[in-house]
Amino acid sequence: MRDLLTADRERTVTQITALTRDWDDLVDSSALVANDDEHDPEGATIAFERSHLQALLDRARAHLDDLDEMFRRLHQGTYGVCDGCGRPIALGRLKARPSARTCIECAERGR
Image 1: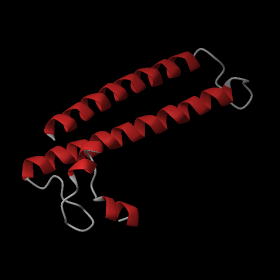
Image 2: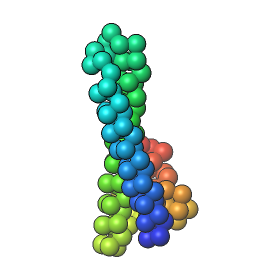
Image 3: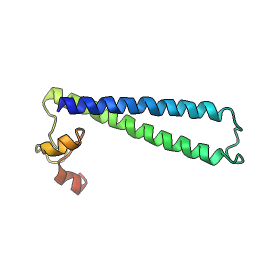
Image 4: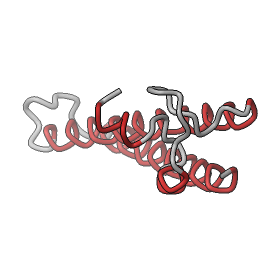
């Protein structure tokens, strides 16, 4: 499982790096145009792009936090234990989603 978590973490860090670069490029390019998004024909597009990139960055950073928590649990010997019911999470679920915090049953119930 450590290998799956490590690979997922590396992909997530790469994604955060790329999104951060995209964010910086967007900020730099929008500095060259009018600051009045409301009256600039490109303003809505730029505002949407900022919002979209911010949401993607937030989600990727949250996933990275989840992965770091899974490494902590792995180290403590509690990795793979459901947060909802305390039972083991099925290996198939962990292989599909290494950062899973709940078993399928608890996930379906919204725990």
